[in-house]
Image (tube, rainbow, N blue to C red; front, side):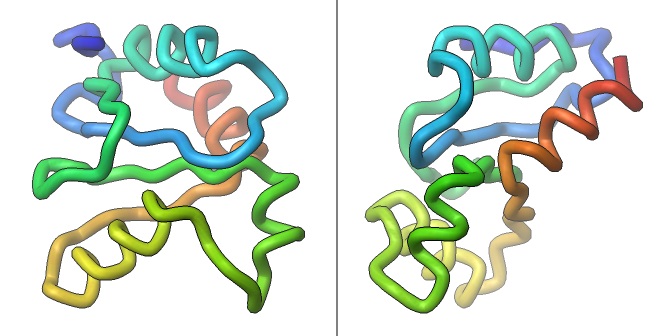
Length: 97
């Protein structure tokens, strides 16, 4: 899904992983409205990863999703990906709308 070019987060590419409090379509629509291009997989162009809050608690110190592991691998190679919990993403959206 392409982001709103006039949105305050234009130029960001976001990926969602884990269980969210909303549907993926709702999360993607919110991110796109703010300017993010929404992808379903982690790529070299990914700049943001939102992780479901429930999964943050469950995965702390344990197995992470394949998307999460791939994003961390890319960060290890120097790619600037920022990780946000879903609740942090939702708080961010209230400031940048």
